[in-house]
Image 1 (cartoon, rainbow, N blue to C red):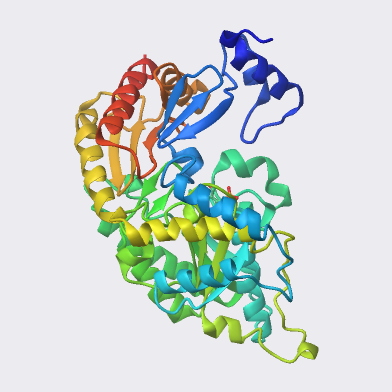
Image 2 (tube, helix red, strand yellow; image 1 turned 30 degrees about the vertical axis):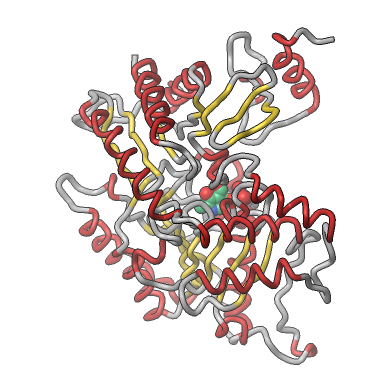
Length: 456
Ligand SMILES: Cc1ncc(COP(=O)(O)O)c(C=O)c1O
């Protein structure tokens, strides 16, 4: 029998014997005193509990998926019921009530005009679907010369080859660049990269002018512009003004290219509105959803598009215009029922109001960090807040990536019951919506102490 005090070590050893983890240099786990491999055996609310009973407050919603707490009883009950009824069925030629209800509900709650739903099974797959659908739309309309995509610098849309092609985070892209499509990169409206004294709205206007110039040159060969609305998450929680989205909508219409809104990370209330696009009052041609869609319980994604796009594929079989994309688990009933239970919570509870109060509390708690000599910026959009650490506050010179300052914050957090997982030099907060004000206080206190250690 394993000594209870060694349960973590025993499980970690078994894990490391066979499992290869994502986004991980596995050697980090082999170094004595290095990065621990933590076996989590249960979750409750915003907390994760390891095999030895130690707790970790999930400050990042387990890669931005969890909305209403771990092992949420309402979602768990819906899943159990569905598992006893229908676990899966082929989704070509067959359908089922959870998918039908979910499609109806998604059409109801997303911006006007998004009336068609294509299901996929994770965020990257949704991006693949949107890219292929946009290209195929233009092909079916007789514009086969449109084969390229415009993406923003600093963007992240996933790591399958198509999604990675339209991503611009060097860490993920550089190694695989020879395998990728070459996007046309437009400068991000990221307000942090603005000129000194320039407002976020001015940065957005300047970047729109630059995008216009790109479209003048490339619209004839461009299928779509793809963006993460309001917050470029994996690129360092970089934030921008909603004017950019409104301007982008106008430019896409003017130059006849699609607008793909990747709301995989920012959808479902993260930015203060149910969908980030609402803050610019716009409706994209494609909206990609995943992560929070199932409340963080099961992989599922959806691409919403317009009746107009749908009609470009709708023809006699012999015309060969049908959209070709099929994953075995498309529209999985378990995942759909988890999504329905998640959306029912949004209907029944004042989620967005409560988030506003929590976000304001988080903002107050983070305020003192603005004066820290190694903090260049504290920024926030709804339930996403980020602290940008720099080597030099005056010039905003970053710490070299190889210093791995963020890792020090992460390790400090684990010792103090908090899961914080900085993106390089950016310490961020993206907690489940069930977090309490006291728990936010804990996260911020641990992060502040971790930052002190990280900048030494
Ligand atoms: C904006 C955005 N798009 C797409 C993805 C890819 O989603 P997945 O990890 O489910 O493939 C992510 C994941 O972090 C994301 O943040």
